[in-house]
Length: 250
Ligand code: 13P
Image (tube, rainbow, N blue to C red; front, top):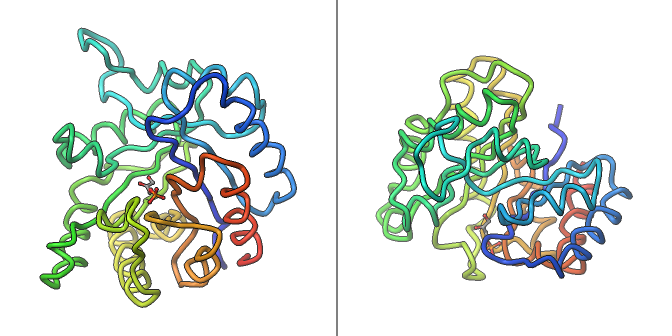
């Protein structure tokens, strides 16, 4: 049976208090699509205001520190994020793996910290263009996944993977349906190897230049259980067609 699709927006470093209205518009419009889970991962500073503005709608963060508390200037723990009203967080986004030099070990620790306090996780993996062109994409992303996965999925919090080829992020370039299908099938096999049957229930999202115009084709690919959307999640007018495509794909 197909998993319920999850369409999550990643606002990255976009959004001010004046954009809360856009979050409300997305939350309101999403009610038409109960067959899809919709979430918005907003800048940390907006989480509390956003969560208060859209009760019942899933607001998430974009990163957490792996420790519960301590001397970590400028960092935010999973507990703090939950306390502010978030129900999920992204970890291991390629922009953080690159700019903040986050390792697989750190990503794993962040995912474990989030899950252990009941915060859902979207864990990102993806290859560079160089790796794709060398023909090593699947092996490289499998290795990244294996090294980043939390030890256990026990607990109530939702856990999802996002396959985001780095060269597809913000570039307007998207892998072919066959390339996405090959990668998602490989990731599904790795998840089942790691978690037995529960690995079959982990949603595998695709991310990288998803738009209203290409969403239906992407959602038709086997093992694509939703999308992680950057630029096209900032406005309801761009985001809702993607949610509608997920609803139509079933
Ligand atoms: P774009 O949808 O802007 O390509 O960003 C994808 C992404 O990085 C989502 O996390």
